[in-house]
Length: 102
Image 1 (cartoon, rainbow, N blue to C red):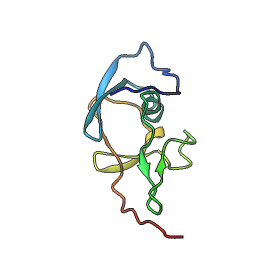
Image 2: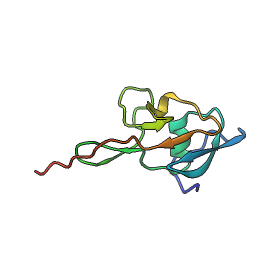
Image 3: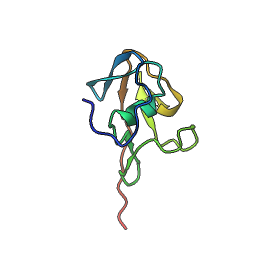
Image 4: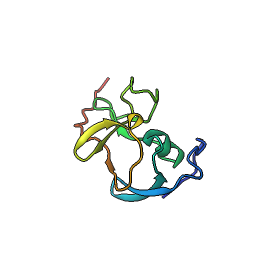
């Protein structure tokens, strides 16, 4: 499922492990920062904002902005604060989206 990405893959040479992203298999470098690995693999969006539904992707890469929220094992976490592990089941957080007219 790897796609073209403007981000450089810094995990070259690391063994790759399989994770599931929204149910689809994806191979990522083991031990690499999860947010960085997803960006390098061509993943453009991890979640949508609850108000407008706008897509969000990793931004600050240091745990301050919460744009990289993902759900792993039923728990919503920041992808930039996790490392890739074999067998991770990553999904978008289940947030109710309410569109605002205006």
